[in-house]
Length: 328
Ligand code: UT7
Image (cartoon, rainbow, N blue to C red; front, side):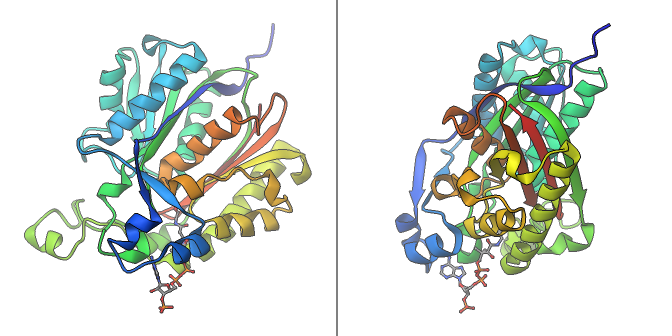
């Protein structure tokens, strides 16, 4: 009897809205400069969803490409997981809208709420379902329209984020084999990064709108410190669990929030910066979409080749973090 194959990545795809918002454009909206944004974050421009273009639309754009790359039809999907902190609406799950738009009638569907770590949480959940034999085809999407939850009057946050989506089809495979995974969270740091309004704790009211409670709030410098520590630890754990050495990693695909965070993380991990795939300059922080869009581009650009070890590592609100080592 042959041993069942472990979960791997059958296909990848991403979708980005057409509209580009540059740092120079932002100079006209808030008191900021291209120089500040580039030197503090590494970001030059980001994408913005068109009016009426929602998270589920971006997710479907990415999902269709991933399904085509995998050679899997929507009807073959067993489960759809959409990682997002910007769902189309509070209820039902954006994954259900994606299911309907794809015509994936056999699939179960639900969302994953782990902010910027969401795609890695989704990947780990999908791989657990596949490894257990419960499901054979799982679509994991990271999709965000952050431009509608950032406060365009708050220069400390609005310059950081962008919109986009990426998707992966997970199934038993030796391609993109998920060798090790690690997830963590620290609920004592909830207040460092949150959208306080809109849930039952602070439902929508005139007062919640007046106090701008429906927009994202972040203590940037505190999140920065925790991100460096959390991602460094997560990288270390996934590499160790995979039974490899840091120097065997061919490409690091980190959550793209700030190039300074990424530099500090790979320094801790003793991995040279040349091995890191960066796209934060072009897209900013796309939260749950960030890691998966970077993975798609890294594979497309030949930065991850057959047989290579790639490290995914993410960090976000919650606080949450996650990592995985994949053999391509
Ligand atoms: O996605 C997962 C979670 N998110 C992150 O990982 C983001 C983590 N945090 C960061 O990336 C950084 O903390 C930021 C990019 C958000 C900020 O960089 P920083 O080096 O930590 O700057 P700071 O918040 O300490 O602010 C420095 C100064 C302040 O002025 P004063 O008080 O020193 O006079 C801010 O008011 O920069 C000012 N500032 C700006 N100036 C021009 C803040 N935002 C801007 C801006 N343009 N857009």
